[in-house]
Image 1 (tube, rainbow, N blue to C red):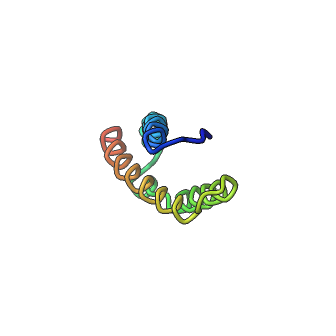
Image 2 (image 1 turned 90 degrees about the vertical axis):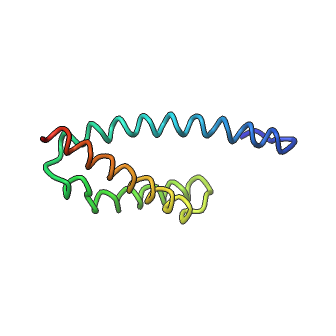
Length: 96
């Protein structure tokens, strides 16, 4: 991690990270769209057990990376919820 000398440098670093995060979310989105093809119905898309497994995993990763696991959980619950809605739409398109 870079040690910034001023607020402008901090913002540049955050902007760079945001760029990487959006690219990774785009990649994640493509896998979500692929997953929709393999699921039977909307309930299968929601997969609450999988959601909780992912939350457990990212909370552990948060602890390992010295970030508040509650923040990461909240971010991931929102992220997953958004992707589930998208996957439901994709599932309907591929299964109609």
